[in-house]
Length: 473
Image 1 (cartoon, rainbow, N blue to C red):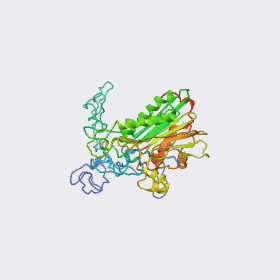
Image 2 (image 1 turned 180 degrees about the vertical axis):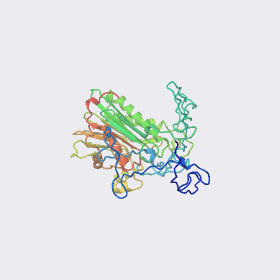
Image 3 (image 1 turned 90 degrees about the vertical axis):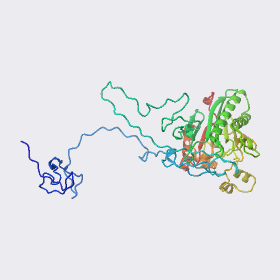
Image 4 (image 1 turned 45 degrees about the vertical axis):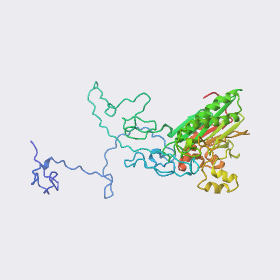
């Protein structure tokens, strides 16, 4: 026998919100059947309000869960920093809107300052070229529900099924998946700036390792490096590291640094096996790098002393060459080489002198080092590779260390956060000679933790060159 509907405990009709009495079985306003409303669940709080604990349900059987992954001594995973999450700046230090923000204003134009702390610069008066990321809007793609059955035909992905197939060698936009990417790295359809492969680079060859990172402020990585090893005529090894820093106020500084690093490395690999003295080979390598950067310059209609190459691509260069008995250093610009002995009771040293305004003031006796590097003009470079360079003066120095150590080759993106030789030695891990790649990563992390205001590139070479490092690479 069916049961009669019980009186409701509702205060209002769930259909029309009409007030109800406790004995109502139907709503007097709309006729809603109140017996169809489910009774509210009983409340069983874990801790009773009066402070006593209610009877708890039987304990569930235990589960053999896998052990969690270790997260370190603090039991908290390390935070992940993505460069795209940080607001960027243009080459003059002005703040840029986030490239993926929906209210991104487009392409603001401005003249960056000629002198900017924390990076390779052009002396005052040089023009500049800046390109900004373009905005993009996120796309939404509906997903078709799958058909039932094991033999169902899998439908084409509606997000990609109707998209054009890129031509050989072309790339599709990662945002809209429809437009092709132009030579400048922007989508021809939606204008979205594509991720750059050079934002973070690492390479290890056993006897040398290098790491380069975009940093937390720049919108692209304008540094480049090349590492390699070869053999001298007597069979002994020679290990090479070249680091280049693009001049931000120049056009295409990323291309300049890449061309210079490759040209210098190839020149050394060609000259050393033929018996060329390592110091002479380093000099020739810097000249070859300069010629490669000069070749990037295009004609200009501007007037002036350097009219054919106004604002030409430019970069700095620094290189180190390690053999079983010699350490050769060569440079143009303000990137540096540091010597850090394995025995940390020994004195570390900086092996290069900057081609910069501050270094000139100190050399001329017009300022002490603290005063010169505190000046806003301190990092204006006085030497660089490029068609508009006033004069190419490669510096090369030869050393014969009497004890093992590591050679640190870096851009100012690192040494701005460890300027003195003692500060750099403190930042270099104690096992750097055995783990050069780990040490390079640690040094890049040191710069990022300090603010990462510039691109950061560092190479680490143990000295003397180990015999297993021989062999062309």
